[in-house]
Structure formats: structure tokens, C-alpha cells
Length: 215
Image (cartoon, rainbow, N blue to C red; front, side, top):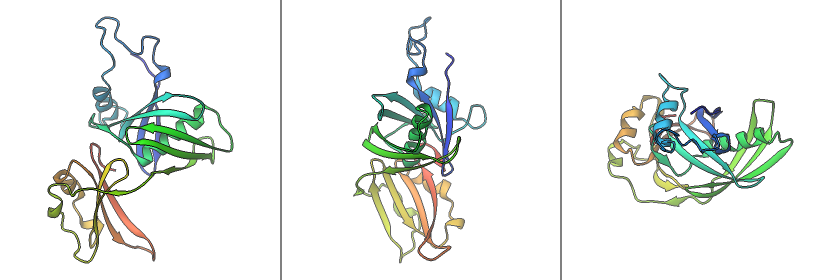
């Protein structure tokens, strides 16, 4: 099967975007075996940074109408994810480019976490500013193993969902945290470690994403 894939980067988070309309008329079904595309396997293969294109995830796009589209996300390990903020921004940028849009446009993405609105405005032929309404932030139960992370006693620890689960941990210095090992302790959630600075009213953050690793 030969398909066209576009690659987008949002804040260092990179994604492969495949428009399902670009599949052959058979929908990618193998004529010899009758097998449909195995998207988890293809995500692992294409997202591998050593042997594939390399990316944090694969986004499948299915247009509903001019401003609505279904977005399905597979992580680089082949697992399915409900939502990604940077993924949604990259996805909307792909729609914007495909539409040869001008000015500013808002798309409604239908994801496994519900609908998300993304507003896109082009800056150049290759870049755009995109903002996503992530919806309500809700508290969730703490994942097993989170207490091994070594949070700073005077800084907050929060377990929240924005359609997908996150544990946010305050630490003394994000640079010395072994976030890969810590992320593997709680693989069922996305882990963010944060610390104040370097400027006033700013924070420094490092991220370990469920199903993708350090991003």
C-alpha cells in the first residue's frame, strides 16, 4: 500500500498526518488477504525514529464537512490515545493547508475525548499559529506508583484529565530529574515535572508522554 503522509511539528511534538481520503478506493484493504490496514502496527513502523519516518504519533484524518473532521491518534508505540493538544494543533494545520485557507479558520475536531475547537492562522507557507480549546480540566484519581517520583514538599502534585490523564509534579530542578525512569513508573498517564523559572511568572516543564516517551 502506497500512501501520502505529511509530517508536522508543534512545540517539538511531531506527528504524521494521514488523510483517509488519500487511501486507495479499497480503503487500503490488501487485495490478496482481504486484511484492513493495521494502524497500530503501521504507527509503530512509521513512527520509529531509527527505521521509519520518525514521530511521536500517527494522526488519521477523516473529513466530515468544511470545518469538522474526525481525528484518531495512535502513539509511537502503537497504542491508542484519546487526545493530544499539540497533535490537535498539527492536525488542524494539516486541514488548513489542505484547504489552501487564508486568514484565520476554526476547525472542530471529533476525538476520542470529545470535540475540540482549534483556530489556525497562517504565518508563512510552512508555519501557522494554532490554538486549541482543551475544554474543562477535571481531577482524577492518582495513578499507582506516583508517590515514588520525589515531589517537592512545598510544591503541588495534581492528577488531572483534559480528555487524557496527566500527573503534574512540582520538583526542585527539572534538569536533574530522570523523567524517562519516572515516566515508566506510571505508564498509564502522561507525566509533567515542573519548577519555577527561569523568569518571573514562568515555569520550566519536562514531559514524558504515555505511549510516546519523552517529548
